[in-house]
Length: 97
Image 1 (cartoon, rainbow, N blue to C red):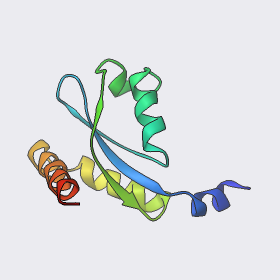
Image 2: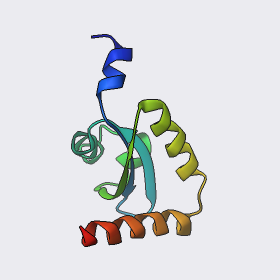
Image 3: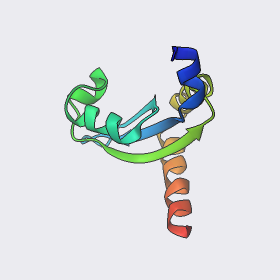
Image 4: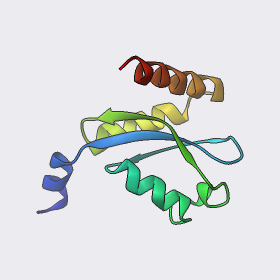
């Protein structure tokens, strides 16, 4: 299966991590659990390597990798309070389900 076919089949997510220094990191993945384990093992992004452990603050579904990357960029442009508000909204929704 080539990358294009693989991209169509997989689900993509945009995620926000809270680092040990309380900073926020945003990324994309098609396997959230695997990616968090990578970050916590020091094999994730350079930013998170020195800010371990990290924990998942929020995640959002994206239809494909392209849309996930666009949403990641949009979130990265937000201020910290705006990112925290996004995380809070998702937390409230999870508690309602």
